[in-house]
Image (cartoon, rainbow, N blue to C red; front, side, top):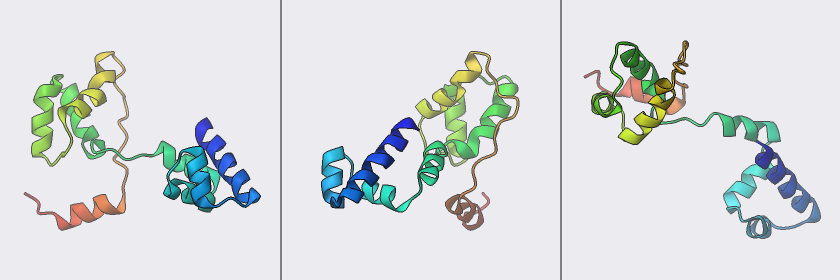
Length: 129
């Protein structure tokens, strides 16, 4: 978050100087689209966007947590079953998600998947089977 604030400030300082988006991007080693996003958004919006990045595994967190509590602690066994449910990611993402469980940091309240327009549309438009 500190880096986002610093970049936001750097971009706005250069905008006030009258630099073009392309020159700012070149100087700060950012894409032109990133510079444009920094010019159009508030710093708070950028910080919120940076902390809430959706992941492929979000829709399957509750399932994985439930299976872990049932005693299935092998990511190699859980990944194919989760993929049959529609998960498109790989086994390494499942392993990274389950790593805190191995250290005893099992969350007591697993967060619900973050609802996005894409996910809701997918639920509505996909076949139940």
